[in-house]
Length: 216
Image (cartoon, rainbow, N blue to C red; front, side, top):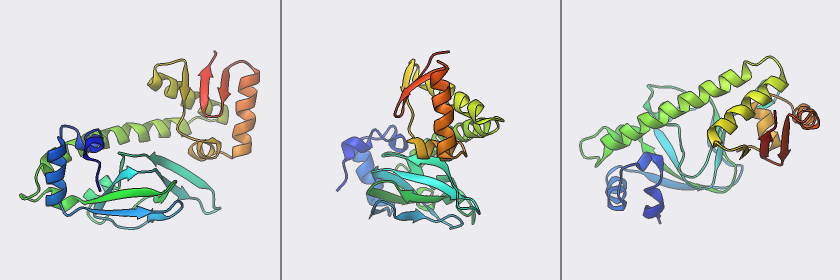
């Protein structure tokens, strides 16, 4: 059922052997569930005491404004964890809705079980979670800085410069399609497409689908 070799590469299992993962799963009361594309895994405002580890597929965390516009907070791919901070909280409610972008398989891990003495390697999981939460903090700070820019052009250029810095390459890919990027930037797709086209005509950027390069 589980691909233990692949799971040793997941950040939450950093420092684990295949046997360590087997022992952890057998001792921690995890549950595994499959969801179809478009199905909701976690509703905004819902309480949850389990964190989700994506074994296959990808999900999106999003909110919806009163006008119905979607605002993407994060994309979760294979090996990603969602709901970790929520599971650690005392009665916290989810700030986002998590839904399946593709067919997905998710392992749900009860956080409180990690604290019990009989949970093998629970302390190492918590250590790895602390590192993941730190990364999420910086990702959130990046988005806040991006959205604080006054114009859509400034938001786009800030986003692309930071993505290039992270890739360490002049040509880089972004994890969003146009709709998702518009949602991430709190913009409208047509406005985003127009501004990207202007930047390309002006020789500032070049792009094909979700691959970009910055010229100036």
